[in-house]
Amino acid sequence: EAGVTQSPTHLIKTRGQQATLRCSPISGHTSVYWYQQALGLGLQFLLWYDEGEERNRGNFPPRFSGRQFPNYSSELNVNALELEDSALYLCASSSRNRATNEKLFFGSGTQLSVL
Amino acid sequence: GDSVTQMEGPVTLSEEAFLTINCTYTATGYPSLFWYVQYPGEGLQLLLKATKADDKGSNKGFEATYRKETTSFHLEKGSVQVSDSAVYFCALSDDKIIFGKGTRLHILP
Image 1 (cartoon, rainbow over the protein chains, first blue to last red):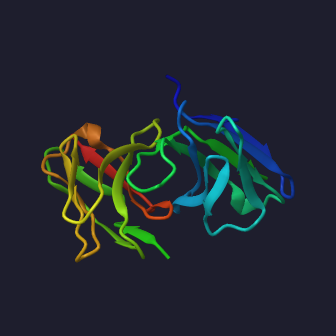
Image 2: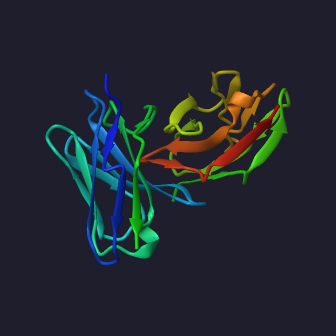
């Protein structure tokens, strides 16, 4: 069974551009979470989608947005890229629509570099 | 808002030493608590969890007890191995799942 898959693996953009990151959850999982992992800052919670709806978002500006499709895959969009957006973006999925008690399965991430 | 604080790394120990990685949390509700581990070259994976006060999570010789009175979930292992070298993340699950900054552990043979 395939795990959580993310694409692309690496993405290089320049300031002001837009980036689109994609995530496919494990088959049967309905929840998708996005995290930003910047050096020294650990995992910062970005967004949580379940059953196609945004359930919660972290303390990030509105230029970070996303969506979840009917097949439960998800996109993260980052508009007006800034240098400090350079980070590893991790996607995780889980099989229940509540965060409590449930195990997250992580993808390998998309390394975004903003030049 | 909710937060997780864990000890700064890196932590360097000799093989067979006793390990403690401290983790404390703040939460408005009654969260579940987790430890995740990231081995070199691999993705994050769940190590153990506890869902209510006084629960003990355990896996691969690691243990952590949910202490509501001290809002802590410290990770312990009695005798570490070189293969335990990794980055360890404490996390809580309330209305979202949030993580600490991670603690890098080096075990010397």
